[in-house]
Amino acid sequence: ATLAYDDTTRSGRVTGSGRDTASGTRLQANAAFRLTEKGPAASDIVIDVTYALKGPLAQFGRGPIVRVFAAELSAMVARNLEARLRGEDLANGDAIRTG
Image (tube, rainbow, N blue to C red):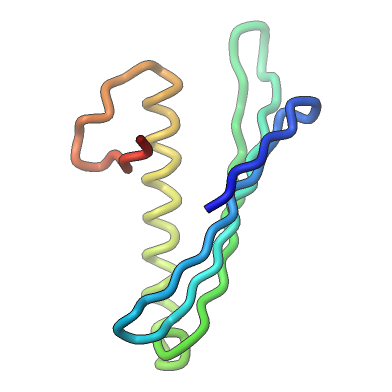
């Protein structure tokens, strides 16, 4: 994955791709994020995730399953980010390990 920040617009993008060796299915994903000031001591962050799935899993009518998985993964990223911004410990089972 690659990560890019734009400090002037308070935004960024994470771009990544992967391939499942068992099925040959390929995934490309982008997550764009931006911060907007909500007040003197608060900000909102908006994260837009898009993805493209190609290969056997995409062709066998598993689109709804993939959408549910992508929605849950996006929700986990959001929970993880919120916890980090609050300074909370990420040791719970829901947290995605980011280093």
